[in-house]
Image 1 (cartoon, one colour):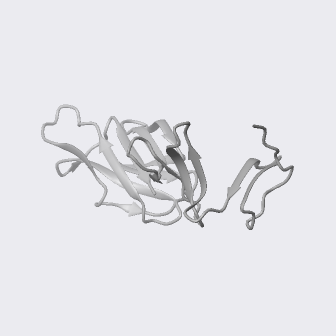
Image 2: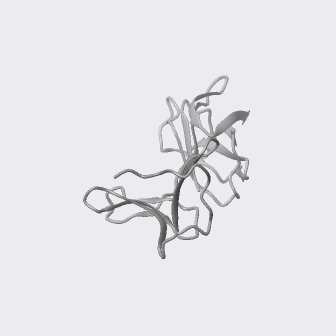
Image 3: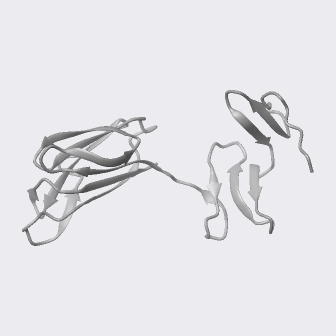
Length: 169
């Protein structure tokens, strides 16, 4: 079955439409009672949804139903020894070495607010026993544009060989 693509944008009041603009590319618009857009597979199983009236995107990745996807908004793996350096990252513009084991990660695109969740991990300090970890509470600064954290071995700050941070919002 061939589908004709409207040569312009679709309107919010349209019950459904397929459009195209040079700036936005392909535009799919729908207006259902529970989802504005539903993508299904050939077995009629829901794969992805955009709930009516939201900008949330949900998908089913083997969980049995499509749920809102909470994506990793920023992540970084950095070398915290010597001259600190970014090994790999996404949505990170820079890092700052504030002192022994004390790092600030600055986002390329700010978070919508400072109410995000973060996961922090470090490598163990070479030659020191005990548990390893990262302390994001002392000192800790969580803003829309950055997060500051301190790597500690028990209670002693140290320059970690590898620091990993993931931000979810």
